[in-house]
Length: 90
Image (tube, rainbow, N blue to C red):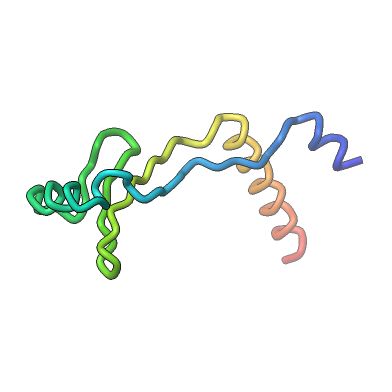
């Protein structure tokens, strides 16, 4: 019964961040350009960063978005349920 209720509320698998190796800044000519920037991290705007890994030197692009409202409301609901359960067991 709980599974059916959850299924009616929608799919709750959500990814809101991805990190990939930058296709240009990890090439020989791109490395030269990156070195001239003299930064370990470069903010490209809302939720978008270029970062250099300290150990490997690989430049990565990290992009992040906010969670969808439906997913955030599900998390709030589940948090309230967990708190209710914890309060009942105390």
